[in-house]
Image (cartoon, rainbow, N blue to C red; front, side):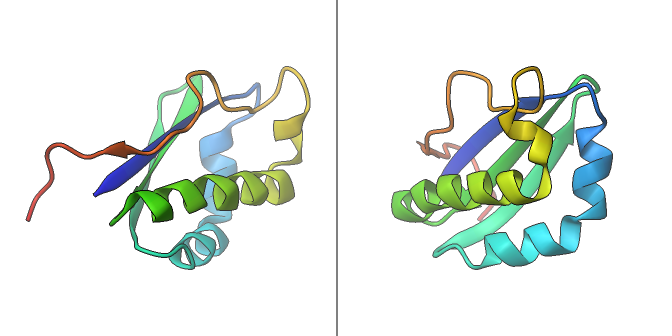
Length: 100
């Protein structure tokens, strides 16, 4: 299993905005090869998303798919001082502990 973690900050409530578009986001991510699950963590002043895939290739592909979804549905994400990935940038990592 591989996971990609993305963290976004914004002056707007991203968790609320993403929740309103949840069905579209889920459908988009389910098209990623080897997709297993996706999670959103609302940290108040930031949002983290975690995408889990069976293999590294799927996790890598999810980076581009998620970035395109953000560009289309969260237009403020590409502008300075708005929602944007925070370093270290998204990169797939092996998952060490997961339920069987």
